[in-house]
Image (tube, rainbow, N blue to C red; front, side, top):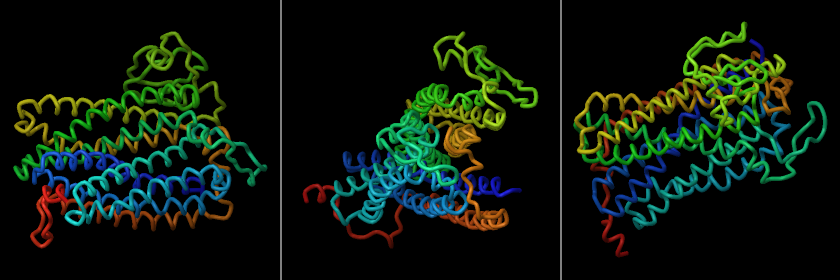
Length: 455
């Protein structure tokens, strides 16, 4: 394997492991605000226990997320130094903003969230919870802005030539609000909310099946199912908006999504299929001309196909087709599961439906799969460009790193990440089995909610 393929594999591996955790912390942050707000409103001790339990889970997710994200910053400078030089002036602003306005906000209030129970007033603690949730969302804003600029670069000019060329910002707000940033941000946040919601649903369903902590589990699953439904429908709406944007700004990617080869003809929408790239056709089940209707509002509207691009400017079609359709399929399944769960909540029928609760336990993996598949389809779909239309993947590599060095570091990262994942699963399992009940040794004299309000 050459250095380019190994560098791509290394970055893909590290970011895919890392991306397990930010969506969980963003989605769980929203639920923590709802849970603690319910506790402040009702004063119910069960709601306090519920909130404290999920705060502990949040702390674990946040810690592992930070640890797994550090490596990527170094990969920019080691494996992709030419790319880093090209985008550095543009990326510097949003990444600095992410550190100052997001990470510091989130981590600064995290201590109060984790250790402030009984040490600060209840409303102060709730404020810290809100700030942590906002901080996690602000992180998503700036990271997505930076990534979206790679997909649809605007607000810059090019200085220099060859390997010394670089993009410089001429309009900061044009960079922030580049043509794909809002669609990608809203779609990403909906995926994060789903990840957090289905984690809570899964653990709560597990407790209900085991007949443990039932009052807390019933409350948590009600809250999480509402967020799961909102975010599932939000994914559908933002996904449609994103597809319209891709059709305008990255037509080769949209053509790969549906395996559409003709240069300019109405396009079908495939439910399932397999792309025969050699013969440039798709074998599968399609809705005739439906893609044209969805992106242009007209079944006879032409859609730019892959033959409009030189072979070297096309992304690998079948993998993009498969990851995209798998993501859409999972999204539709999550809408169905959330809708069925909300329907059966009426009269408490959900809690007497063990087969559905078992599905809910396993469904925690579905948003993770969908998020990973969506990332794959978006990033592979812009190939061979590392910055769309400006810098090819092969042009962004470091000039001095060898294949052997990348392979060795990939093996080491694999071992380290495997240990981190094993530790995370072990600790998460331990916390879930312990449940939302504090050890006596952990309980300290604290002022009651009423005393806190009077104070």
